[in-house]
Amino acid sequence: MRRVVFNQKGGVGKSTITVNLAAAAAKAGRKVLLIDLDPQGNASHYLNGSHEPPAANAAGFFNQMLTISMFEKGPDAFIVPTRFDQLHLMASHPELTELMVKLEARYKMFKLRETLLQLDTVYDEIWIDTPPALNFYTRSALIAANRCLIPFDCDTFSRHALLSLMDNAAEIRADHNPELHIEGIVVNQFQPRASLPVRMVQALRDEGHPVLNPPLSASVKIRESHERSLPMVYLDPRHKLAQEFSQLYQHLAGA
Image (cartoon, rainbow, N blue to C red; front, side):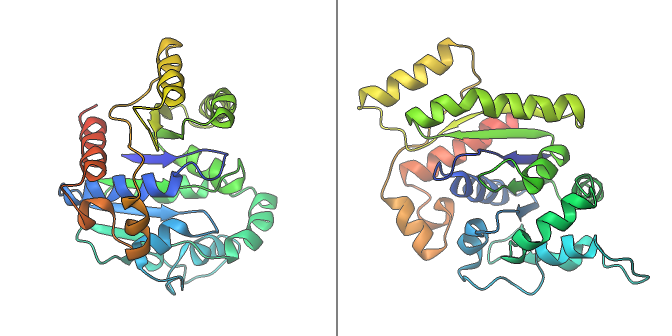
């Protein structure tokens, strides 16, 4: 299974959701690869515990696409293990920003899909974190994935952008990847006692959008998770938010 977490709006918890669901999958015994295509590298920092990207990273993977060599490296050369059993990482690198124009000019959008089809035999699940923009890396990820998750943070701007997000994913499906399926909307930073989030989520359900359960609660514990570079299922498995991530993953795994 190849999942992409996609939202063109920043600050909606995209990297947090990707890392924590990938960690929940690994803790459930699945062999997991997380690919960080966001040049900001938040998902990589979260798993690595360091702001220095590893020598093997996504920039090397994409840079290789721009050269012809008799000694081309396989995708495993750009993947590193993490501190967590069963969880591997193709880390981001700031150089991804510089490479994007060259990759677009050479029309390399389908190369990630070709690689991930090979890695399907190695990993049970592949999770892809994307930049907060519809650019080369996001399109490559949508072309490569089977499933798409859309984070939603109960914000008015997120509500307005949602239809555009779903239209963009539908266009990629129609033009390039008929396997792509919008698996659902992940409600993040949910406050059940506040009227606005409750109304917004109910409105999405009433309109027939695929809102997933459970919603992810707002919690200061996630800041500690970021600071210590420990996904919630490892930081505090009994915490409400850790259990919500585990339940959400189990829902996805059983779908």
